[in-house]
Image: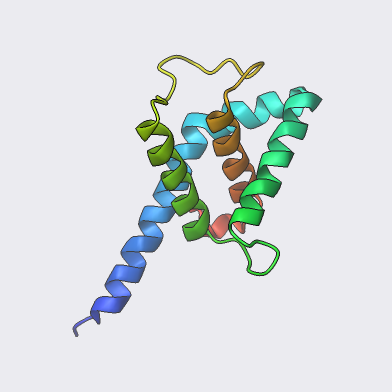
Length: 120
């Protein structure tokens, strides 16, 4: 039996989106969210960024999805890289993260709120 092309592409896109968020969570989210929960100021900043991401993705009108969050994160990283930003080579100092890292951490926070089966 042959699988229609649109099913293969959709499945591949879903896998790629989950992979993007899983990689982001490993690189930024796990340590960053732990730091945010220990630092109320950082947590408030991440919450504000999360609201900005939700607004950008029209989260008040449409439910957030893995694909939307992954696309947002990839677009943010690409744009930041074009403007000279580089991911940190060493562990992040979460006492003073830059805007891009804080925004990526907000994406991780939003992804964590999704149904975990979408990230498996």
